[in-house]
Length: 74
Image (cartoon, rainbow, N blue to C red):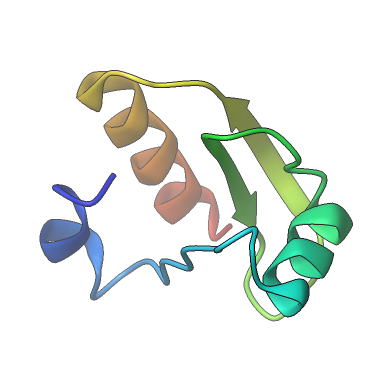
């Protein structure tokens, strides 16, 4: 994911959570991403999780998820 950040950062907000921090662990819990690595796509201006993925993912799959989120607005 970190490698794709420069390419997508103008269109996607990336939030990296540190499960050792209470605030981050609480947010992860609310988003339903309790395993590592986990990815959640959250709709703009909302708390709605539109997609969740778990485990290490290949770049092609990450691009597919990011492009889909951009195309649908979240």
